Image 1 (spheres, helix red, strand yellow):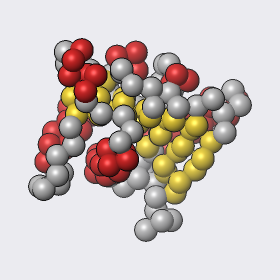
Image 2 (spheres, helix red, strand yellow; image 1 turned 60 degrees about the horizontal axis):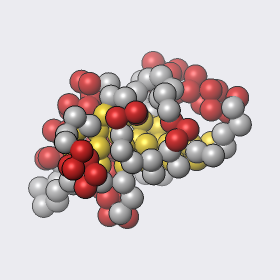
Image 3 (spheres, helix red, strand yellow; image 1 turned 90 degrees about the vertical axis):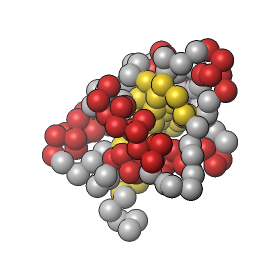
Image 4 (cartoon, helix red, strand yellow; image 1 turned 45 degrees about the vertical axis):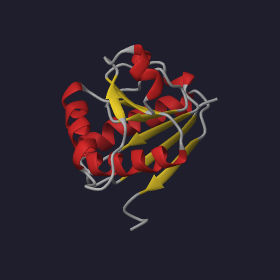
Length: 142
């Protein structure tokens, strides 16, 4: 069963996502990132520039099959486009279709009220289906 983790009170979702992806990349685990197109474009840019001395190999899901197979971080708007099933980092509002095929799902929740409301609905969806949910309050850990 998919392990679900919510990271709450994230002040800067893009910056936090970059740090999480750097950590995942260092551990060697492949990660799929699911987000709406505008946010995906911003994340793609941020991954190229967030740390001047580091490069996080990543590609969009529209890359060739060879590139997808060799790239540990794949960015997509639809989870069906993701070649890996280890970790799914979700930056969208709705429950991601096909999340159950991943070993781990990480939900990032910002500080604005709309983001929190959408997260509560996703939380209920997972809880109602028996998923064990871990909670990480980013504000409390700083």
